[in-house]
Image 1 (cartoon, helix red, strand yellow):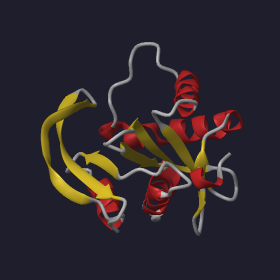
Image 2 (tube, one colour; image 1 turned 90 degrees about the horizontal axis):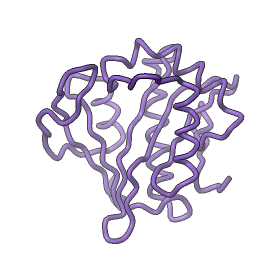
Image 3 (tube, helix red, strand yellow; image 1 turned 30 degrees about the vertical axis):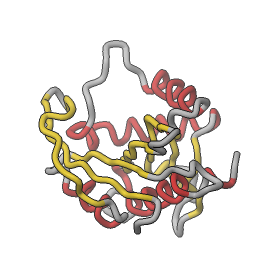
Image 4 (tube, one colour; image 1 turned 120 degrees about the vertical axis):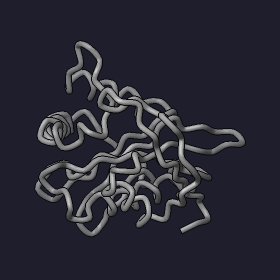
Amino acid sequence: MSAGLERRTPRMHVRPLVTGDRDAWIAACVASDAFVAPWSPARPPGFTWEGQFDRVLAQNATESALRLAGFLPDGRVAGLFSLTEISRGPFQNAFGAWSVNAGVAGQGLATEGVAAMLEIAFDPAGLALHRVQANVIPRNLRSVRVAEKCGFRLEGTALRYLQIAGRWEDHAMYARLCDEG
């Protein structure tokens, strides 16, 4: 694994997911399912966490996405941090997203993990991106605060942007450039 694609924070090791992370990742997703449900798209018929993990690993094998997890010293997954729809050429952009394990919510680990994700995104030895965008439901105050603490700038609002939990939700559109922050 490239050193540019991982970071150690004061409390976590943030790195790309690998096959051996399956059980810890699934345990975190199952434990946090109800906690993240208000902010998550409806799952398609036949959805399983095992199948989702396989899709995440397949995405990591391409250059279009990087799915990271923040691991606590005891091996638990504290949070999930994603850079998706990575565009190269003149754009050099990705969409950033995050969620925290319900068992450690409210402890600042999401902020720590997103800061690490941004370091990986902008590091010339990492993804060397110019811009990371994050779209957040405005009433998701915890994620809004994470975006603000991590230096994202509010650029506008996208009306009825994504269908989340069965409802079309507006999203605040945030972005951060590599030379900001």
